Length: 632
Image (cartoon, rainbow, N blue to C red; front, side):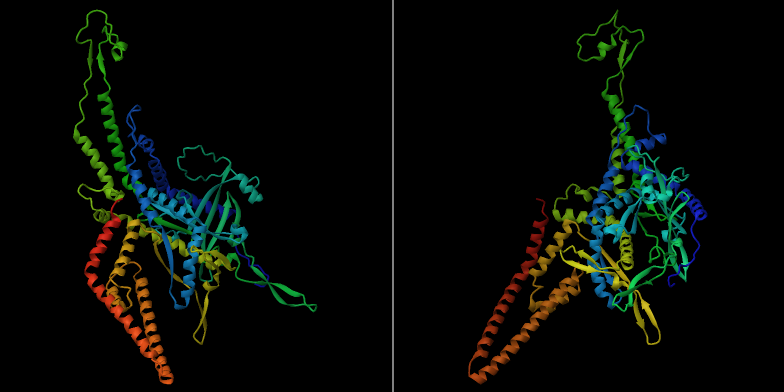
């Protein structure tokens, strides 16, 4: 590979045509999913009467069409729960030698996510996930970021623009994967002048949402990112091709150029350095698009389904009760309007002036001839029975129970529950569905962070400066993530540093924070942080389980160690004082001993007082807890 390029089969027109046929096949396989996603978006916008009219459920053209927001309120509550537990990654090493690198990544990754405005992306993904049942993240390397230095880019993807092999459960098992995007022709021509005269007229179209605005796509062309795998030297390689129509814009299999690097190979007689281009690494055709070899997409599923990487969401779960609620609201409104609006039967040969009769502001109504009792008669409407209102309320309750969006989760309580601690306990118990849903989402977040680590390993070759979230500054590069040589004395092998991820909530709900603070105060009041009670406190903590338990035990052990060091220092000082007393005839050792004894006596008195107050410590902590959670 010294300056030579490797010849590999190129991706040309025929290969692109074959990929386009595969893309059409994949689109046909997810037609039902696309229809469901578009329908769910209409329910989210409370335009579901339009969808119901298509199925003949809209009623008469003049009927009222009330759109209640019970389903929307369910999504609002679930999204709030998810954002209350915004995730934060902690990197854990699998090898002792990777401990320092894991600590650096733990500090660097939150900054990388913040620079990508990931909290906004996470929020958008959760809206999409709650509506459609699945959110998709794209984790890419954007070479145009930071003035050409490049950096990680994390985007929320639209499932309508992604295509995979029908029937697979994991997208990594798909033979091919396509990501499409409509881009304006002017922008494409600026970036790829070779597309002149080749844009427009494509036969493939992607599904679109029913937008309120008029979206014109006549001046846009479909750009396809095609991902697939090949095998090179027994290794699975991710290949990539970008094409428009039948024109290839870039393909890794066409990129057979061996990368080189300028290095000083020596010096000329006059002292000028001699620079040579030295081959480094493999060409893209052999190395692949990303070293991790995976499709750079992560699917976050809400309620999983068999045979598909997507699932279904809360709109799919609750759209049927929402339809029934609105249909019953429509019937009740029609009955109310019919009963509240006076209507009359009028004989065709009647002599009553109908306009004057309908105008309640006119005291006189003119008639011609005799006024018969049957000339005009009111239309009586039967009153609405209370059972129908009860059925409507039961349907609303059914939706709340089905979605786990009961009143207590939104701050409401049942009659008779007034204590703050009881309300908080009900809210905590009622949130188990949300906690389970959020924990499942943490697994997808872990996959996103893992892809970020792999991109850091591949592309962070130059040191980068980071301002950490605590205000400190740090420099980081990928040197600590590269393969590490291992030798058993016979042969040399290489180990790639691999890490595990622990995902936790960055900020938990206010009640949880208050509970942790109160628990720390209780430990303090019970003397857990006293040096003379360190051993008993550690034994007690071993039987307990709570958040940051290791941190508390570490603080107590450090205090115990410091106390031992102080006692050792006192002993050495007394020994030194005794030597001075024997040499100079002073009483320094006796004075120091009396001072130490006085401090110990004071400590004993404090311990006695502590024992006396221990009985009431728990009662005071309970009172303080009640005061802290009492509504203001």
